[in-house]
Image (tube, rainbow, N blue to C red; front, side):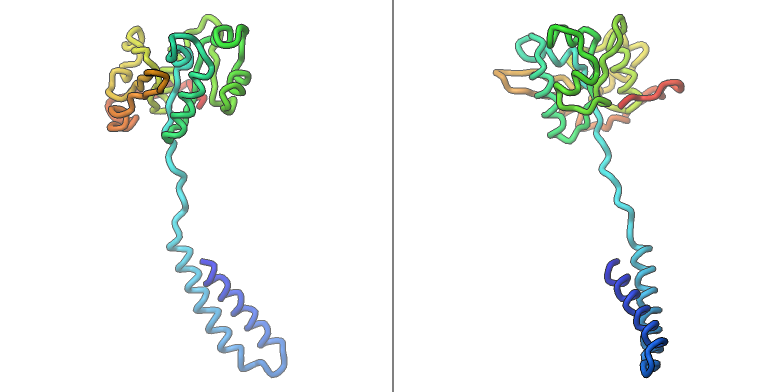
Length: 211
């Protein structure tokens, strides 16, 4: 597209010069034809150009209060960070949700969204700490439904299957853990089916996803 634009501008300069500089009148016809031809090329290039589309995000919701126990059955912030790093390396965009007591388990005191986000190296809008007395499961399942996202957790959410039957769909849940200190994620089945495959209830009309 740059070349037709350059030729068009150069031709316009030629037309202007031929009309204003004595003795250059003969150049007007040639410059005019060149300007017309380059304009046609420019229009054709603009019509052919397709807007670049951003690669679709592969969103996942991480059950932070479950994942923190994956290594040695002990809550550790490094465990969560390693899982998030692996997901990002695999091309996922993770959002993570914690129970209200996550900070007490990980740092000995309450930690809000921003404090946990800082420790995990995430933007604050990628982290949710639910209010005290509110189960994180409800928010995890609602966010996953609204976004058509998979959930990273070893929880099977059996108590929630009436409200969220989509968790029974193959690939909806990504399990994982550590074996001899090495992280594994059960992505094979999940990778075979897109997040929108199967019958998934529509998002709640009065709720907007955070992630």
